[in-house]
Amino acid sequence: MVRRRFVPDVAPCPIGGRHRPALTAHRALTVAEDGPHRLRPGALDGKVVLAAGGAGAVGHAVIQLARWAGATVISTVSGPEKATLATAAGAHHTINYREGDPTAAIRAITPAGVDIVAEVALGANLALDLAVLRTCGTIATYANEGGHAVELNVGQNMVLNTRLQFLVLYTAGPQARAAAVEDVTAALHDGALPVGEEHGLALLRFPLHRTADAHRAVEAGAVGKVLVDVTP
Image (cartoon, rainbow, N blue to C red; front, side, top):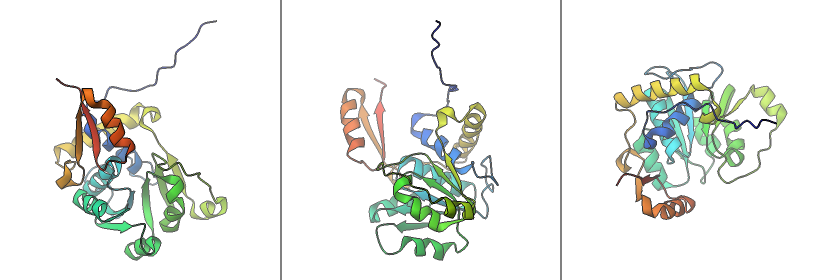
């Protein structure tokens, strides 16, 4: 018997590691049934995007790319520090989901509902997402932080005509990845993806010999993007 080794269809990516979350963000913003399927200035005009966890690396990129493409951007956060970061990234509105009534707060901003939710913790946030999603809206989920079970109310989602899109870059296909690289590169050229604490995303760098410390920082919930420098 001949054993075949599976090799994922992953094209080389010319974008540096600190900007790779932007490729995931691009995918989250381009999977809605009614588009857009490419990002550029004006592509999201009139759309409302909800970036869950806007202080995280992908959430930060969602805010920046959605803002570059013309969307109104709302970000849910867990406290004032993260609200400051999401605002620095470009979010028009931040909602502390641990205080008050976040559903009412989001609906006050967009009574018709949110067009696209970029979701990092589907199990924990699904009830809120559905409560603020417009009919035929999209929930694009790239993680399930916290590991909460995901339970779907089938009837509720049928009535909403919800699109629930799971995503990971490695199996998205070469066309989707190539489009993401092209559009993110254009955003970089436009200066739309700055990083650093003043832009809402602190970079926490560790030398290669401290890789274990970098892992511990991630496990401890470090706010920002943890990077390991492999250059001498």
